[in-house]
Amino acid sequence: MAEYPQEVTQRFHGTPEQMAAALVGKPPRKWQSIVVEDYDPAWVDRFAAASSLLNKVLGDLIISVEHVGSTSVPGLAAKAIIDIDLLIEDTTDESRYIPALERLGYRLVLREPWWHGHRMLVSPAEDVNLHVWPQDAPEPVRHRLFRDWLRSHPEDRELYATTKRRLARDTAHQPSDYSLAKNDVIDDIYARIFAAASEEG
Image (tube, rainbow, N blue to C red; front, side, top):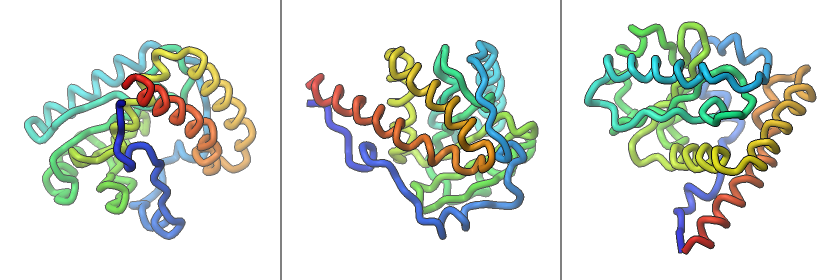
């Protein structure tokens, strides 16, 4: 039976106090509105370009660089923002990677040590969300599972796209509610992912 540890199968929920404390500096302008677009094949090229620059400036610090999120799923409608999971050995010592990323124009916007050491930076145009994780963090595993499932299950890909478009309309007056509003459909899809993994064994 294929089994995943509890920290992979269960969604992490931060407290309101933690979420408020996570923000570093000004929130990105693109958080002020949610625009879900049709899939664009150019998103793959945008990831490749960003990944190449990351490898140039961080080199051997990098364990892996993965294109995740909705823009990594061919055919899936998404916000036109590339999500990247960057794994390094440890995120605690920010001096090892933040200055190099700042030289590329990235800006640190979230520091969440309680969420497996997560840091998030945005590119100068705010069209890349760079998520930096320590190598043993479970969340990047969840991201890859979700991405790969949607790539191979068109019915859930369509369900997710339809739900995102509806929620973008429903939360237009309060864009900060959009991510939380997606939780139900995301949890339903994860339930199918983990059930299928168990059945494979």
